[in-house]
Image (cartoon, protein in one colour):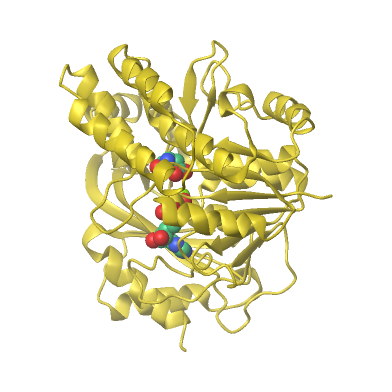
Length: 439
Ligand code: ADP
Ligand code: ASP
Ligand code: MG
């Protein structure tokens, strides 16, 4: 029997009612044998995600504040789920251990990971599935990178012993056994890791929207659902802000050629979005697959006469960033100018060092810094086959009276990226969306 791996996000497991919906979905197909869970998310507008509460709890404990009220609130949410599901299990011992862990400073990642840990224990009891702790099957290297092959070996061997199991997402173990998490939203990656190890025929990612939408629904009103998207397009859009699926979650399934299906827990009958390696079909009418964007970038603009003939100029500039472990996002350049676009959060506190370093290394004629830059990515596999896409993007931007600060097109013609001011972020996305999507 070929397995389906299902992953349920935080809103899909926010309370007991949601647990019941999730169990119904799982039981509706006997192939849904392996389940990955996030921590309980928001139940209503203004509510808190358990992961955020655990982070806060840890910060309070570290700074010596009393965590009792907050910890009781977290415990209360789990106890309520257990009692409303009518389960006879108790997580009191685990909660005591976690509370002690906070005071003993067992680590920020350990604290955050407990949200998924407890949720997986509860769902496994409710479903009658085995519980497999991610710390026993997901591994990181000493430098903090994910150890994909070792994880796959251990996880596949382990799955052979379990017909049906629930895993907590988001975390794994360092070589010394301490807990480490992926970045935020990382339960999507765990789902993909389990799908690869199980050699699943499908990885279903259940969330609170009916698929990957052509734009962020919090910015564009009622965007269309993308029917089919390739792994590479998805990575471009996720990296650039379409947070519905973590951008790194494609790697494990890509190796094994397993498709991902994004589905809506509240509307299981909706088809959702299929994410595949390649697809012959593309939207000839709309050309683009989707739009996404992120705020919070900084541009360092450098100019120097005859930069074009100064061999090694770019390397010297990037070498300064490398010394401070800062990665760059884009590098648009002219004959005598070059800009380096970096995440503002990454360069924060290091800007003076970088500017002085560049000054010393390449002696520019001028160097200036622009903050509050937003990047918008327009992504589509059909772009390479059609003309006029860039023209349409810029027409939309110009008509919305927005000043473009940077333009970049990936060498594979899969995306066009524009840099604008933060303040124009929402308007620009709406303008581009309505330029391409006419009905
Ligand atoms: P989960 O808790 O299930 O992992 P997330 O909150 O991580 O869910 O992701 C789903 C949310 O992603 C949606 O509710 C939506 O607000 C947001 N989102 C942003 N961009 C997109 C997009 N292009 N398509 C769908 N959802 C998007
Ligand atoms: N609970 C974690 C977070 O809030 C991981 C996840 O939901 O995927 O980021
Ligand atoms: Mg998510």
